[in-house]
Image (tube, rainbow, N blue to C red; front, side, top):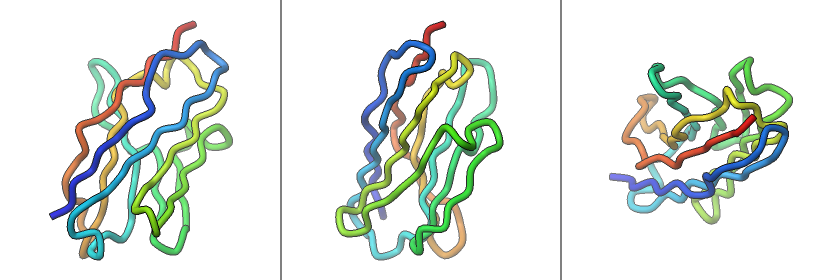
Length: 116
């Protein structure tokens, strides 16, 4: 079992930046890919970015060129640097991981609000 704790959310003006962190604890040896998802009010949760243990990354088209995912395997932490934020980036951001090729448990989420 892995526990995930997100932090770093907040209120920012459009064009601003935030850096989210997700710290993993527990059975961390089982973690392969880590990812960030988000859920805007009234919308389904969507995948934002992923990073494998080998640091291969993938991004949703809506955030390419603005967001950067990274991870520190020694500290069992994954980051999401968000630049040039837009109001449509508003939502709750969640961390998740894969083990055995399957997406596993969610973190509790951190709220990101971008004002226009």
